[in-house]
Amino acid sequence: MQIDSLRILRAIRFATILDFDLDDELKKAIKKHADLLLNLSYFRKKNELDKIFNSQNIDKGLKLINELGLSKYLELSNINRVNTTSLGLSIWAQLDGTDKYPFNKVEKEQIKNIRTLMHESVLDNYNLYHYGLYISQIVGSIKGIDKKKITEAYNSLQIKSREEIAIDTMEVCEILSRKPDSFLKEIYFDLERKILYNKLSNKKRILMSYIKRQYK
Image (cartoon, rainbow, N blue to C red; front, side):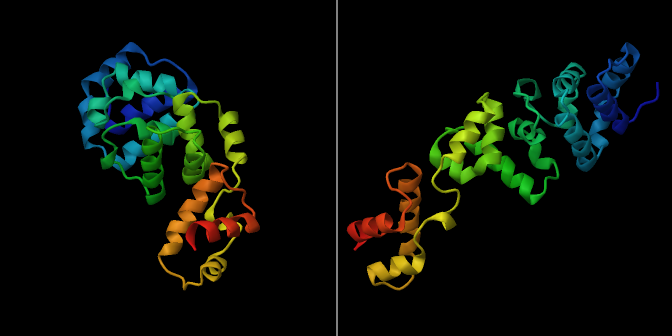
């Protein structure tokens, strides 16, 4: 049976998306020529893998990759240990060896954030705020946390961005009789945490009183 590197991944993709079984002869051919994947560009490999990882039938795709011994030639380790979700980016974030694959700037940042948050508490108020709902839901899906629970926790935050803090920098400077400088960063970091952990209400008069008491 004639086979090439791209056809190997396409066979896995079609079997995954269309949910059919590969015949034994094709499986033998794929195993025999699996090393051809080393000659396929990372761009082409990523394109095919993205479609597999985003499939609703992803478990089948990952099972085939493992069964046929392809992870070695895809240069991706621990494929057999990923927690599957319907979000392809979450699969990439759980894999080792992805640095060779051509992710864009946004994808790289998202993968970095997913990997970091996987070692922290998803439902922590500051983490929800810092990483945002999308990344929090991806990590939640990996950890088996109910999406609705994450959404409700995120929606209950007093603020979703620093711009929503009820006092601006000029008002802070006026209260402290100081010109704008690096001290504002410290104050706003403090305000973010106090508001997010509900130690302060996000109301101007309350924030003004706190700043006078704490920083003047």
